[in-house]
Image (tube, rainbow, N blue to C red; front, side, top):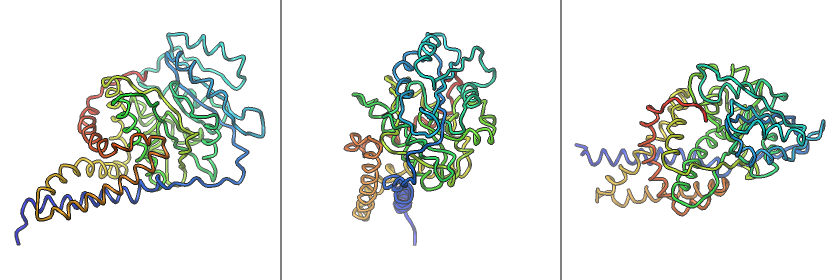
Length: 379
């Protein structure tokens, strides 16, 4: 019996469809139905340090730092229960003047001023390492100067993630909703990324986090020698460290809406593409098992729609093909809707199918572009 090329393509479509269903049902559904464990005593939190690296971020700090300094953080030993450290990395604007002006009003705030560049260490890994070293507490929460917590309970919820001996807490760093196609694309790509890294973490396969909303133990950082193994790479201060240090037993996720952070998104395609191409350069340094897991998902995503078109052209198998497509469409739609609701991105759902196709086009550009991303300063 001879198998025709069309039949081979159809069988490949079936295989790719089942691979997609496996990822949705085994991984992504975990995020859709994830429930936070109840705490025995939610009124007490361990002391923690918030570390923010800033270079020429006066305007962002003025807008966002007060919300971080005014968190409600229950702790039995002293009033605030936390400290906030801003590492002022060679700023040339009025960042230093602003930070000095707020010191009297916030006794739990302090700054570390850097006046020299770290040679051969691009990005913000050096200032972040200095901030980690200067942190007074073992639990350190990281965010960026352009990020604002969604509520005054941000630190309370992130600190609660360290129960049961956890060493890492992954949060969601969202982007502000603004009019326009670019904003929707940026938010969908952010959702698409979170769908993966949060779901895989819940499934016991954590592979990355985002520095806009991330927490881990200082002891863990120095036990893994910080960023030493990848200090020559401009980006990766968040995902490469998590990729090396996270395990299924030491990592938790926090997806309560009150624990999100929000950033202002890029406003031009050029700026956003430059940002993403720089971020994507780190994926090739992930563990082999993570590259295989992510590569399988990405390959199935890129192949699915072209194979669907070929499969639908075979009139003999048209209804079977349509049934497989419909089932996969239903599973994806339900999962995306539930996760989008949890991540406060439900306004993207009506066109989830279009965004799903567009994300394939994005990766066809982004993956080759990541190999040619220039080495730049972190800000």
